[in-house]
Amino acid sequence: MATYVTLVNFTEQGARNIKDTIKRADAAKQAGAAVGVKIREILWTQGQYDIVIISESDDEIAANAMILNAVKGGNIRTQVMRAFTAAEMQKIIDKVQ
Image 1: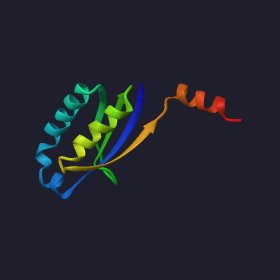
Image 2: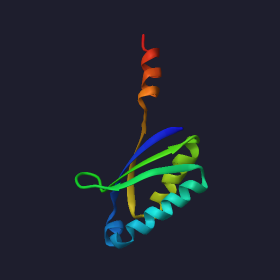
Image 3: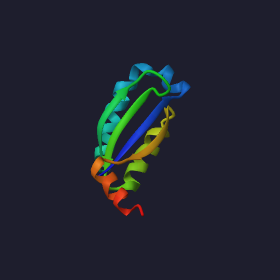
Image 4: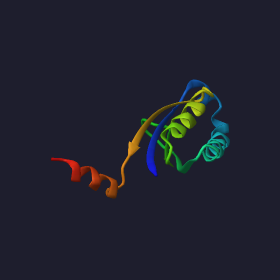
C-alpha cells in the first residue's frame, strides 16, 4: 500500500466550525474506508499546520478523490505528500546509478 501524509489547514469556515472537527474527522475515516483508503491517524497539531493525516491506499485515484471530497466541504485546505517506508526507499536507492 502507498502511504500518504496530508498536511491540513483550516479555512476561515473550518475555524468557525471548529467544534465539529472531530465529527468531520470521523466522517473522513468512513468516507475513506468506503473508497479503499485507510486513514491510519489524524493528529491535531500546533504550528504551521492544524492537522496531519497519515493514510494508506492501493488506489491513487481513490486517495486523491477522497481528499478532493474533503476539500470541497470548504473547511480545509490540504497538501498531500507520497511517503516511503525504509523498504520502499531501499528499492529506490537500488535503482540509483
